[in-house]
Image (cartoon, rainbow, N blue to C red; front, side):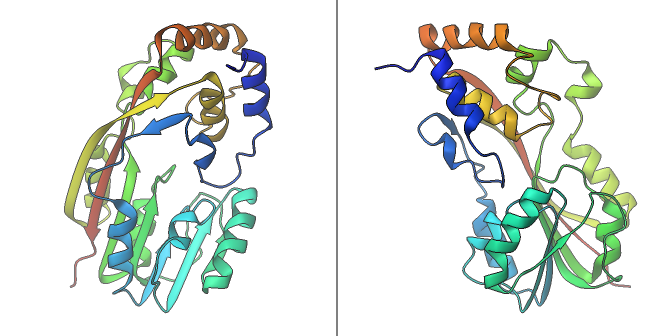
Length: 254
């Protein structure tokens, strides 16, 4: 029997959104993955590092899934529920988790790491990344690109101005990294299909990825949620597109 709108809403509202694990969406939403395979790529690179830092690690899920970590591995996270989750997940693996507000400076000495990584950072402080990297060190990350999932964003917020649509453009990060004194090694961008199969998946996603529709609550958007529920029920999945880019930069040797 198909669940009602009210049942789907209640289920999505009661689900925990701690951490950065999206397994609750299994069977309810699908997202095409970037061709470069970030976790596998990160695992290969970390296996050869001696001292590494993962910035904005979320609940620590990416690092916990890797088979080999450096002798010194540190992760930072700002959101208290994620700090607790990452600590429980990563401490048994020998990873030090540091609670750190997403503001400079990073709480580490200059040139402390030969490798820095991040998956989907909310903000990127390029000067700080350059400072904590050793000469010859590498920054490797997967960033969220511009206009990501904007079909869903604009369904609730209406058409967005160009400066909002183009925020997080890879060209801006390339310019900022270069200005911080880093040398760009590689940038790869992809636009990826995302499908929401029920309204519960939409609600869960917007509760978890809070910057998509700032201040989102079911009560605030109840009429639009009902309309979208009917649309999905009658026409099939709501289609959106996420954007991702892989960026690698190095700190030159003098």
